[in-house]
Length: 138
Image 1: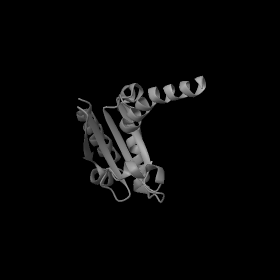
Image 2 (image 1 turned 90 degrees about the vertical axis):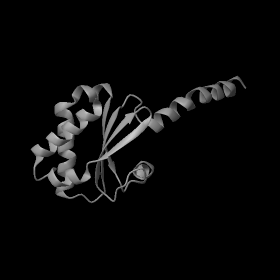
Image 3 (image 1 turned 135 degrees about the vertical axis):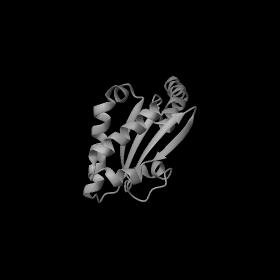
Image 4 (image 1 turned 120 degrees about the horizontal axis):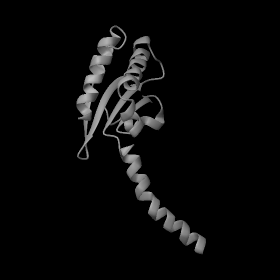
């Protein structure tokens, strides 16, 4: 009986913390960069992911380390991601910057920009993404 009560007490104390972390992802994250892709990937798609990752590693290492900035690459064909994917207006590939401000999510769709420059002009892509992230982190 004591074991059962201890188990129930543990569940009551941990469920709110788990639920909070599950909904907000990383509770410290102020900005999340999401890159969505399907199973079948083209060279442009791969270049966008690679150049986004390089941009974040080059300019935002401290924000990544302290958790105020998060980079998430998600497969849109993976059923485990379905709930998160449904919160965005996407078909297959997409690049979004999401700022958490006062409990609200402010989504910036960077998909067109990413497909215009992610492979054809990586320098412009990196510069533009860096600028958007800097604005969001302020």
